[in-house]
Length: 251
Image (cartoon, rainbow, N blue to C red):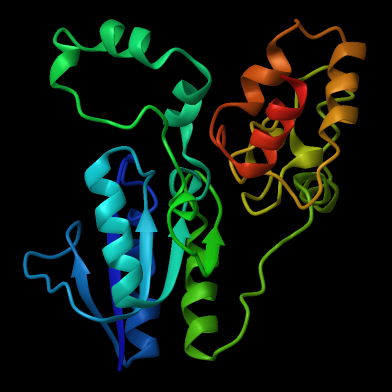
């Protein structure tokens, strides 16, 4: 029997909902017990876990303590979604003045006890696998569950969104004058946005060794407004390590 825990930190809950979409498939697998999942059940037990799935970014001191406890109790930890793997869209604040944001959002900021930055879980613990997306792909989630049951590495896309566009026969929206991060973003969404004549916003995060500088030059050549590249890059996966390194290098 495989014991699973599903945990939430700062997020919209969208990635957890993917579990509800694969309930029938999970039941067919058998030998799976989900002992902790606040979103789905009223009775929960924080025990030893074979696999813990973590959604959401680490945004408070209490979050740091909890994610470390989850790590201690889990044989495998899998982060699911952009928030857990890269800090999420809320990590846009990481590049802004934290104090000014608090005062702008909250009438009594002195009562807010949060971290200055929104962090992925991997900033505090060792993560065994990262499942990308905003939200994640339900088929990818099922692949991860099956793979860990079979003690093998999940077989998920590592190529860019551009290849998905080629397979679907989509014209290149970047060539057509739309800002697009498809060439540096890992596939998995089915190239949804380019299929509707919109540029890719990078929901699934960067591919391995993305050529960020080259794409940035293309944006300039296309005449996109000055900060557009940085604005799109620092959104869903704003605090991804690859993007962090890029900004540290430029600053």
